[in-house]
Amino acid sequence: MSNSKIFVTQPFLPSLEEFTPYLEEIWNNKILTNGGPMHQQLEAALCEYLGVPEIALFNNGTIALLTALQALRIAGEVITTPYSFVATAHSLLWNGIKPVFVDIDPLTLNLDPKKIEAAITPQTTAIMPVHCYGNPCDVKAIEEIATNYNLKVIYDAAHAFGVNDSTGSILRHGDLSALSFHATKVFNTFEGGAIVCPDTKTKQRINNLKNFGIVDEVTVVAPGINGKMSEINAAFGLLQLNHIESALTRRKEIDKFYRTELDKVDGISVVPQSGQAKANYSYFPILVEPSYKLSRDGLYDFLKENGIYSRRYFYPLISEFPMYRGMQSASPANLPIATSIAKKVLCLPIYPSLSDVDLIRIVDWIRKPH
Ligand SMILES: *Cc1c(COP(=O)(O)O)cnc(C)c1O
Image (cartoon, rainbow, N blue to C red):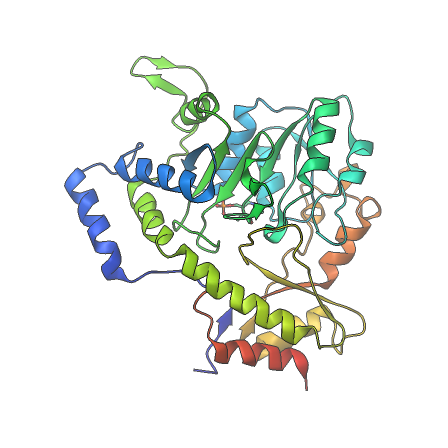
């Protein structure tokens, strides 16, 4: 066992037997998609679990982001972070919107509110921050800027499932928040996503947009897309929700173990959690400092040689990919913090079925590269 490969994440799969009754229900209903009973149940269950007013399910997080931008009729320029998964900025390009990259805060690794104002132009219509690794953005400062400049705020909340600050769900901030339920995320529906919305009117518009813009048999009100989640995916979400608390408990144990053990290792610093009343332990990012025995890539390769597949999230920065790097805001000189963090970061394996034996093995290898 201790020689088996350890990946950065493993999908959280309840037993097959547990899924069978859900499948039988779908076979009995003979409704496979288009907002069927499983879809409706999952929306209601997620609103309750997350503590949010309305939620619209999607077939994946990227289509949720694209649709959120459409729903608010965002155009022109949008201020966003280079330190994220590439889908954040891609959702802007797919809507014909110009991303404007702003640097991150060195502690939270989220969009730095102090640097947003300097990037606002007459074309700016919105801000798209990311709650990176589930660490909440400075939502208050971002809201203040948005109010002053009459900008919309769309959070890419793909990492922030179940995260609360002192006032409740982090997903209630901004105009809309988009979630991802991809297989690699804390809560998954194989593929899936959602938009958290403040009221039923907004949800109705989003529901139209995710169903081709169709209102009824003879009425199409917008050039919508097919963003619907199928009944199988929704059923898996309902099953998964039954296990989410135990999954989070195990993640929390792993997080605590890493923090305690890696604190003693010279040259390794653990990215602190900041501002959560309830965290989701979705990632375990460390920074490999120059005082460590190996470079970041050296440690990445060393772990890999020993069967441990860590990931360099987020390297390269989004702003370094060919479709972005020619933009003025993408220059490394504009993004010194993100550029430096991207060279140091490594995300370690964290998932509910990670065993204590494997956890000790990972920490041992980090302690003593030989
Ligand atoms: C996973 C992820 C997405 C994309 O979600 P999909 O469901 O895979 O389309 C977008 N943004 C961030 C930050 C992500 O981590």
